[in-house]
Length: 370
Ligand code: F6P
Image 1 (tube, rainbow, N blue to C red):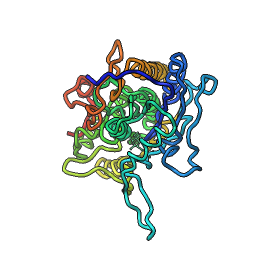
Image 2: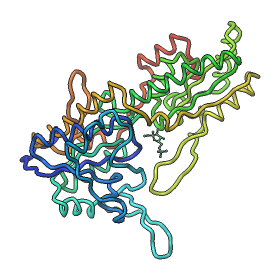
Image 3: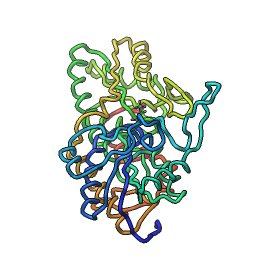
Image 4: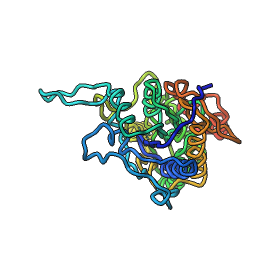
């Protein structure tokens, strides 16, 4: 288990990095309130680490007092701002000739923490942000990570915050599509986020009574999806709902990438449209596609997400007060635990293809196109 060090803390920083997720502000509130009771001062770093590494206009550090975090538990987004472009390990830097090179600015960042009198960092983020947090910890900064992502693909925690909100909204959307699809006897293809893992597509697809679910973990064959939809039609059901994760791929094929840029994660998208076109051709039915995309990241966190976010934030401060560093807070019902950051930093948690939920879906007659 991660090391214990003498806990002498006066001032801590919070950063929110990568894509936003409902619950970020609840974590911030819990960190600030719990730290305040320890007598610690809290500041937030603007836009990931831009407040320390970026130009002055990036906004620097934001003082976080109990008054500042009042009433933000239910607020979507992050009051600190975030980015998935300013990774300090591969920071895009413009050269004199206009070209961009990727620089490791992590040592400079650690120096900036010292300069600002910051004794520890609570890093709230997904796989990329936790990898950065682990690198900063290795350079001598005291860091506790908090697992965030609507994709739910982080290792060693039962769930990440933001996921429940995304699944609840996706399920509601799928439900709404049933009636319009049935009225028009159409196929509706719903594309949801899920870059490496199909948790959102699977959980929302099963809960929303989809007829096919395509996820990255189970490469699909489009003719098998079409066959499942035709079989439905033969049984007298003239419409179909297909839920597809943005990171799903056909057997032997690749993920659909919209945009690739140095220093940034690939932008995925387009698979929903492609699947709808292919299914229309194969079944002879009218098909439409809907991309839920960033709608899944917006809005107010569900009660479940609010509660785990508050629990994660408070547990992060308790970890620091107990002298821990280099750990991530993880949900392990009925409690929270701490797992070493290096252990989670390089892992993605995929949907186990033989999991109970996948088997439940198969039992309900849902096709995975395999
Ligand atoms: O947080 C992960 C995620 O939701 C992925 O599912 C998606 O690919 C990505 O964010 C999109 O991020 P953005 O468009 O904000 O860069």
